[in-house]
Length: 251
Image (cartoon, rainbow, N blue to C red; front, top):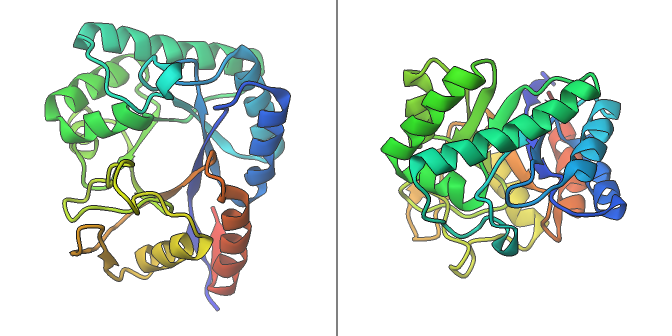
């Protein structure tokens, strides 16, 4: 059977303790890149360093995962900030993680926005453009991970940034191609088989059924696993076995 490669990214470093970092590390044999929280919605100097070290041990690509500076709401609520304030905060988050990575002899390779900031940037061409312009100036070598077909994909291309189209295995979609808001029933999948079915549909290029009852065809370069999901470890272990059986290997 021919082998096909697949890239799986996972949001990590979003806890507080050594135990949280150890739980993240359990997922690492089954993914190819980690998006590390860098002090905005979550994460601190300890968790950043621990996650970077674990990722190096497992041979993973590492990137920054900045979000709105709102740990009380885990960065999942939009905050009204001027573009200048937002850019200053996002760049400081990336700088903090980049500094720790450099001290550990590691290099960041990508960036993926978190939560409400991710969703806001994908819906707003002006916000996406401002963010990509700043990244092109300060971090031109970072690959941007963003929603397949969203505003960040267009803005990244306009500003000469490498872009990876992202799909989600554990979230429902709307026919618009946007993720269904977490507040809607059924938006966050609770069963591993739901997620695996969605992954296989994306890989085989068959249409997904959206939460609003329509059909959607997704073309992606990387698939996201949410590391804070209660089913994350069970899901990724089962998915790994199913992918190998189907002729895929983690990139």
